[in-house]
Image 1 (cartoon, rainbow, N blue to C red):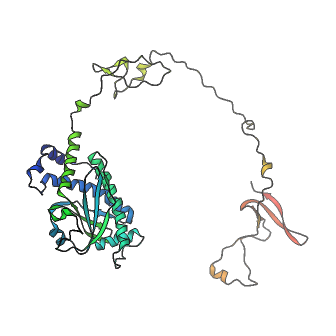
Image 2 (cartoon, one colour; image 1 turned 180 degrees about the horizontal axis):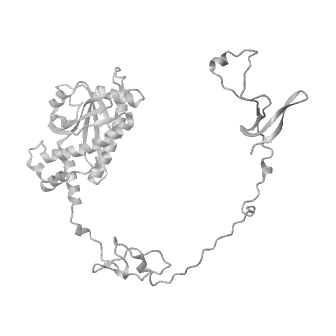
Image 3 (cartoon, rainbow, N blue to C red; image 1 turned 90 degrees about the vertical axis):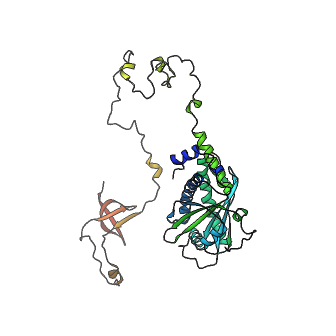
Length: 379
């Protein structure tokens, strides 16, 4: 989603801004429901991307369905118990909403967040799960608030979400739920899929007054964005500046008088005929001068001072030959085993310095020690 309302929704808002006033108290008009649905679609799309980064699983959230509901509708639609996550708006909007997740879904999300595979759902839902899901919702709804800020052209901020385990029953506990749930409210239903672990429905509940405030903000934003362009026309152009000299930087686009460019400059967006601009200018042309190359490079590069590294120790290795054996053959090694090498008798042996092949030689005996006589230097 790109955060932009469709043209039909913009027209509906602009052409019928007072639709909510013709609707009975406690109800939303069709245009208001469409607006709320588009806001929720963009916000939850951004939140799904954030959730993907937290659980490292593919997250899909379907297009929202906006309806009016009451407490009994929520009780019938959700299994018991479930998790209520309260999100309050502190900047830009005045109100709150509730996100409802199933207990199993919360266990899967929190297990994935803590490095599990999402199958550890047999444990009892505790404070650790509620803290983890609160942090997840804080990041998700924070990114959703950023998207909402772009739509409304003003800063939107939320308070830290609070998660509670609620046992849905027909009897409303005034201390366990928000006051707006005792009256008709706006219910936004989504289908959420997390890989092959979660395939269920989540709900977001808004007070009617808060939903109307968001619709009003969208209407004001769209109305402000469609003001006549003439009101934003620039001030009259200043007097023309003197013609710049050839040594000065390229001139900026010049103001227009009677739709003609000033000072002979081309109009912005028009092709420039460079030959016409420089036809009457004198150009000083000189042959290029190149330095002669010589075989003596000592004057360019100073002689290396190899004395600085004369005392650096290097490892010299004499390699008599090599061969390859399987693990089975190596396990059969015993005293007296003969290993045939890839060298022929009398063939020069290899001399390596720090693992680099530098010379060939032959084996000699010096008193009681072996030695190597260098016979060839490898360039």
